[in-house]
Length: 370
View (tube, rainbow, N blue to C red):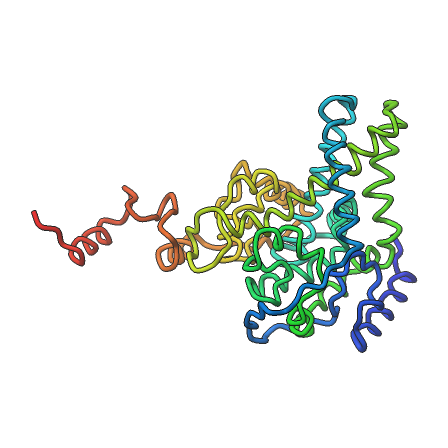
């Protein structure tokens, strides 16, 4: 595939946007929350909360998301009672591939660089990511790096301290907090701008996204097995799209509110098995925020709830994924003992397999009368 002419123009535009970044210069920005500065170097100190900052609503987003969710409810009804079974299977497959475009692509590969991928896998993940329609992988990765660098502060795009609704969807319905824009200028995204496949997606996103997220999912059921336009559009496009959106958002909201904290009890991200199930392994969030460079985003990579890791492992076997980063058992064990809340199933408090010396030491520290 020859991207040279397209990339040249895109690179020139990116260079200009680095010199004078603003929302209008960003190609493919669809939500007001995406209008952050694209030129971002690590190393600045976390920001403090500024709770008095008034919310500025983005009514276009509010109206669009309201319509999407009403339409998705109708699509869910059609999914259960009206659509052909092939249409339902196709909608599920689209949910899986679009989910992988976020989890294996935008998240683990591009945002965290927790593994490397050869161009065929990167191309597949770019296509999957476009079907997901959660903005280009560049924009998604930018926001996610801010989320980790300034987690639970006003420079976090979906700051969980502002409530469940805000961290779930509210952050897309209001303008960005000034601290997010200010601190965003210090984030390094040079690796993303150098990826030609990501540059291609960014440049043509407003063409590729409608084709992948709405048009293709509607036309395939109509053409191949005679599904009605109504069922195809509302089930495979709108219902499936809204479903994967909310699954992704649950990682920001539910997994920052409910669950155990076996690795670090001092942070909000938690181990949420329900989110892990629907988000293909992204719900092991206490582990992920403790060890964000681990490609598994969980301690046990082969867990049945971690389908994304299974996906990456498959491509590692055929050589398309490589340099998979992970954390040694010794480091995990040490961190669990030092900062965990005691809920770890192997090294938590009161576990029968605790080292005998540690148990004896605890008895000496807290002696009990016979």
